[in-house]
Image (cartoon, rainbow, N blue to C red; front, side, top):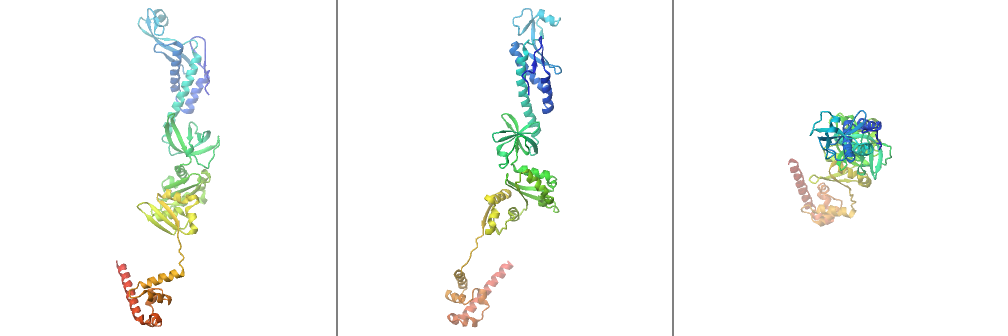
Length: 441
């Protein structure tokens, strides 16, 4: 830390900056990359302000610091005059020639005006100016260095908490992990080392600020890029991601090389690659899914291991209605609807999952339907259809195989047996012809 006493008063007009202050300048130059000369210039500017208070409104006042010894001196440009009316602007010809023997009337002469008690005032002003300049320069360096590092993963140490936000020490700089970018299931301890995703470098009223994230989906993508060489070299492409940080992530991958299995490459030998990522994510569940241009296949992969029965696709509104059996419904939807919700985010389609309704038809209903179907044959009355169904002729196909004698044995329709057979043959022929025409078409 800077000491308020880094100026040590000396006898005479000169004040000397102590070794501590010079060491601090060298420290900031080495640790933060801020030029010592730039810092010296900032301090000199502050010293001028201090000198004005000590000396008064001297003409063109300036202060100089010797970078080797730390000596400071204040100078003012005074006009050589026969009669001094203002000591802040003029110097007598006698005093001027004591400084420079060739001095002439009206000439401008730079004169040392360092006050005897300059040290304490200068020390406070220089300290404040130095710290302000360091903070400003540090912010500028943050923007310069990190503006091209957005999207990288960095490691840092938890420094302190500001409400729910976390300040992370990155070495030269401090960064902020805001509460909105934290994972809700994670807790951090001061001194703990964590890895974060550089989400942005934002300009605030206090200057540029590095914003970190552990909840952003791109953090997971970046971890896979670092862990899976095939993603890093472009063989495997990440087609989509959906994440509920701390709970579950779905990652869709596609291989540009038919010989490379995208899911297997991301999982790694014995699952080692994905295990490393899951460990970094504090055991967050990660589903790696094979991407497919066919939305049915893509949805099936995304909702696996649930078994899907059928799809109703609305291309215009990008909606999919999926039917599953009762025993697969909870698996497809997931806990608190998470599986369906992440699948919707991943694919970009609205997903509705419903259970398939299995209708159990009663005996009477089956008989009624069979009678209705039989009565629809031209030439048959509903009464005849009812008799035939109750005698075991349940469809057109059953009647088409019957002989006239089979029907003649049924008292209720014996007289109409031949006519019924003819009507059945005609309908069968008509339906056969219709099927044939459809096949040709």
